[in-house]
Image (cartoon, one colour):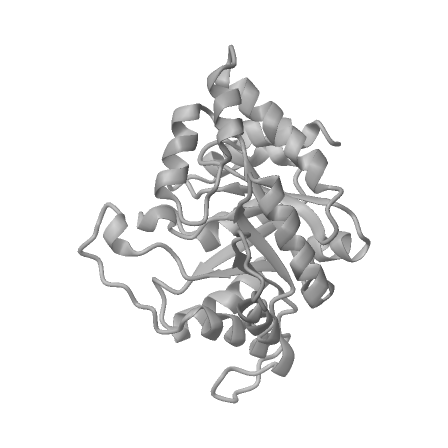
Length: 296
């Protein structure tokens, strides 16, 4: 089993990844109904891992069902809920269930979820999680040294946030993640094209984009109110005021948000170092599919 996402990126194709959240359900059908609109459109679908620190169906099980239905998943792994033994078991289990891509994340803190009394595990930090996955892949052993038969060939991803860089930015955190196995980055929402262009220019200059692929986060802004909420409440989000005003002054705010998303993708396709876009939005699978279909 090989990652089709990796193959597309290696072939210099501009990729489109989408995101889905496991349902509050125990039914495969509910998963399939969520993502069927993205089949043959998205190059891969991220499966969130307890987003918002709320419980849902297992991300591993959800990703396996998606793979069963001939859609390539990217399984998100957070450090929050598993110790290192469980992480190693789920990494191998995911590969056995035809899940070739993983995205290693810190994960939302439980104090923001609907069961704040839950205990966080955090046996490994993000770098430790990445190193564990990469060591299993490269060394074909557990961290203890025991051999692994038929070791996975994961396509390993990490997270990034484009921001307004200063002259002394050296990309140290990105280099650190690449050193422990990251082959692609998916970023937080990047709605400010000026910030993104300057950020990617610096990454190109530092040689980072020659070592890992960058898939830039975008989404459909449903309203000016939601845009302002995102600016105020989500880390790393910077939606320019001109975009907010444009949405607010439109006849249909969601339609205008969709147009803006499509326009930004067109611009981002021409930015050196941007290898694709990652389209996010809770329960917005059909809206995301409509955006991708504009380009396919």
